Image (tube, rainbow, N blue to C red):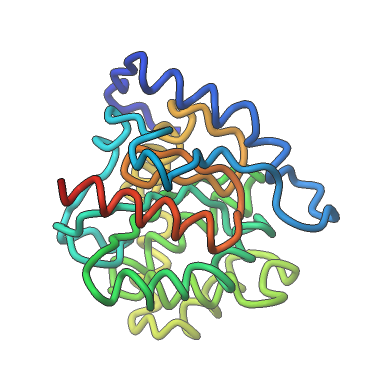
Length: 239
């Protein structure tokens, strides 16, 4: 993994890391036969919007208008950062069932920005799929690739080089030769490595893990957990 400048981790980050570390593995461990979401680390938000929020973690949002792996306005009041792996079944569940609703309900009206972080933890295929998603993003087709790679039954077909090229074609990536070069590039490895480093600095040990304006959430929680956190973050940002 490429080395980059170490993250400065303060007390708030360490506390959040402890929260994620406690529930992350049990929430999304690779044995995906377990049904239903695992316990959430989302704090009660109705009475106190800032409960469970770590202000230091808000700085993890890049808010780069040119970020090809993000959706929504760079100046949106709420940023959801998603750390995920394309071989993770719970990540696929979130991508198919919850994320589209968040896009329709919050991204479309400018409330929410979603920033993707590649966090491959299931070996070589995960790493290759992560780099492929970055490569698709260089041609403006990250979210289309994301949808194809998380389609029902997609991960069961594996993420060989040939399969990733087929997914890129399905996603509408026009220059497949460039896609192949980008996938193998040092830039792709560096980008994925930096995302991984950030996730590990947070104490995340499994996928998916999230931050909503500094509020950690572990696991593919129900829609209500995300709407509660987003609504609370929006109220806090308006003050």
